[in-house]
Image (tube, rainbow, N blue to C red):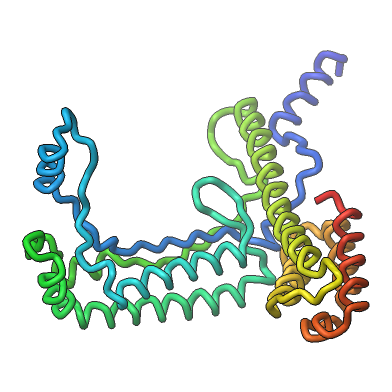
Length: 303
């Protein structure tokens, strides 16, 4: 085999099986999850009132839009909206960012807790919707009194239509490995696609880890601020439990067994060993010593 043939064979082998360096495989230790929740706003655009206001204010163009609050102030529907917000908050807490499409990274150690918790949230969400729909006719009657001349029965969807506006769904999918890019576009194009996905993979993993570091730093920073000063600060138990939660997440979110994340978990855990909110409130020396340890941790790691 001459040199040219040898080089050609090497090039083709690299194109067929491109080497992607420093890309950790997380497909067996994490998955992707997407949470979709939709609710009815309970608002309706009234073009007639909007036009009347323009005439009254002598505008030369549509200056604004008037939206009627149909039943959004009803406690049952307010409860649904608030509950949906709480479900999203938990979803963001238990997962890490992955892509702009809404997919988030859910680690294997977090899966069972997440699945159990999110299932309970979905069941409660659907019960709240059912309770609200049972009172829907009464809500419309109360709205007629509140809205006066603005009331229009045609603004109100049927119960079935309202029910379809409330959705709660969770979808899981695997994290593709870089080597899983299999499309019939030719060796050279496939190599480019794999390299592109490898960069996407690395960037998203870095973003996911940065989210964990940011959350941990925020919890430590908040603790440091609350423990400052000679006088006893008023704080809630969550000042300590929030940091303790992050200790757990530093372990469960570490899908690549990152050494720095392991080290941070151990050091924070040791710094708060035996620390309770009540002890911090009652012992000035303990409070200041704990603050000093927290401050040292904030300086040690490149957050």
